[in-house]
Length: 326
Image 1 (cartoon, one colour):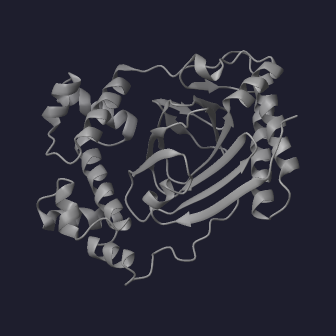
Image 2: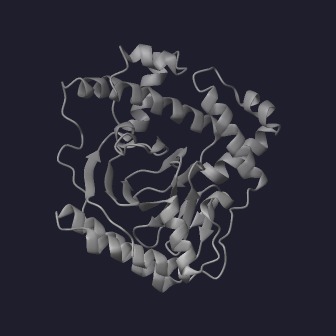
Image 3: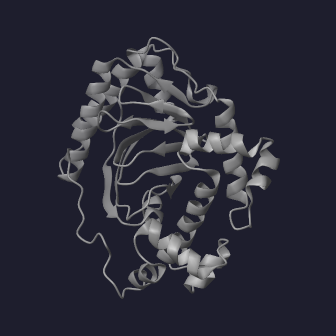
């Protein structure tokens, strides 16, 4: 039996990835939109005793980057079936759980219409569950992320329990029994494991992408060239392009440009941009005509419209949006 306290719940829909990233206190995660168009995102969060449940529903393909909270173990579960997500270069489907110890990097590429549950558990409570279940999975401080493969029946129970918890919380009902069902179904998943889980194998191309992203992140506002990235990573331009296409579905040049567009949009949405030119030049755009054309092509609106909407002169594109439960 897991000791439970009162439940804290939040539920919001956004048309801004930057505001969605700030919706859950204590979670360091960032979203880079990789697919053009307006991107709606729904965030549900519930905290109860040693557990926290977060559900992300994102309309466009995005790149998640961040760090798992210290002192907690993260467990990612697809909320719906027939979806796959690339986590650290490995695909995981509805029959797998991604276990992420506190302090480990979060790095995943999610397809459009992703619907993902993130269940985190305090390390002590998770260690007790592991011990009680007799499962062979490594304890949180004994390794990096792992891909767990419980039985399909146990996974089905866990997914159903998470959905029931969400509906219970949103309807204002007492969450104790629902959280107990989640804890019980998670314990059943752990007990059904026949091994300690598999650590993702980092291929050479995946390693190239990881090192490249680190360099790009540190120098995003600088006038980067592909030759600079190749020199730092130690690969040819052809290898770099193949690696990015394999893991991100984009060329390095396209990814770099999209990241810069994301940063300009974020500055405008968060009210940090004094002007469009100010934000654009800060992130490496020097030709305003080309920047405006790229921005409109990707987001479906001119940067001036984004800024006007943020300043309250235009309505948001997603006012009244609500995501339906499948």
